[in-house]
Amino acid sequence: MRFLLDVNASGAVHLLLAKLGHDVELVSSVDPRMADDDILAWARREQRIVVTTDQDFEEMIWREQRPHCGVLRLENLPRQERLALLLDVLGAHEQALETGAIVIAQSRKIRIRR
Image 1 (cartoon, rainbow, N blue to C red):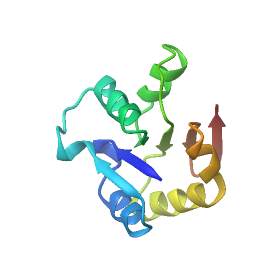
Image 2: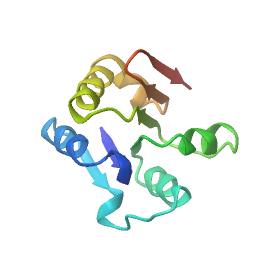
Image 3: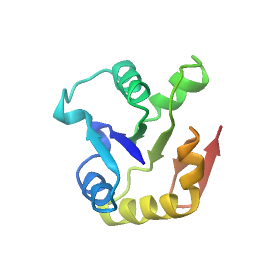
Image 4: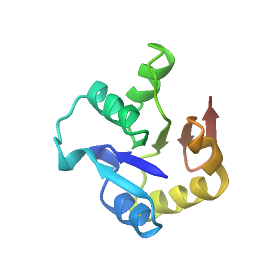
């Protein structure tokens, strides 16, 4: 899969996704202060799934009807818990991500919005 990692979700998440063979780009490599609008446009242009801990992307997509290629919002957990959650999501919800869903992953539940 193709991912674009927001500044707040990079680091260990980037390393794990790359190790698993995914195509990963980092917002921080271009502009750590990039606006969410620009991040969403970049992801759409390159058909990437935005990975973030920020709820703003859900708001932009649902309330403002912004086009997108999918969003994975991970709960802001300690590193090892976040990585385990990421692996769970990739294992169980890969198809949802690939088809442009918004996946909200929290330690106690995972919600999918289409």
